[in-house]
Image (cartoon, rainbow, N blue to C red):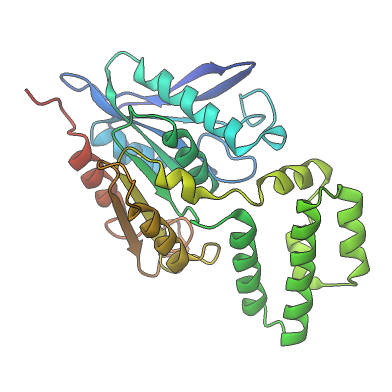
Length: 315
């Protein structure tokens, strides 16, 4: 049974949006370090399904205050994520950061950001415009655009499904046409006609099944978001975590892109990059089918945070 600090429900504003979340503040002499956890794509709540709670408990037990929240339009939060941009979601993360920094028992200068998957793009955007962060962590965050990442994921799904060369080529060609249609401002009806005209494609069905008009518009707005300029503008250390067997993210290319951003001559001197790849781990950095995190994953988080932000203030 957990014996550490218990989370409490909180709300905080960002303009006209009210965000609801869970806050855990451990009792630490001199105040606790802190982290805002930002979930992945789709209707992610404060727990990011069941992924965040064990990470949240571990961090709290290690003396780190943790705030995670429901995305716009999910759980107790108002608004709708499908109407948002990456910039809007980054503003939500920034509001969460400022809220946590102001909590009693939390050291304002020791609060960083953690973003999983799409949340990594979000926290990089939020961090790129601030100079008051001790660090930022991206977890299974592609260094590519969403369009490139989705094509990588679709290619892998086709391969695992045993699609032949012809079906693979047709499906990827259809995907490429949809990306171009999005860039040209095509509406959902035009995109649907393109899918229908391509004929039946079982391999594409799962990708397209949940897309409706509002989701299409969100995906169209997001598809060419490039996280590298945000990574290059960081003024704090960046920990980029990946699972080596992640089927959704081009891991090697993402490490290369974030590494190239870190090597730019105009990179801020504090903005070092640490890349950690956990062999055999998936998109949630788990190495088995029972939801267990990769060995040493949690220890890596707390060790890295502790190195860049001491758990207790120093004299």
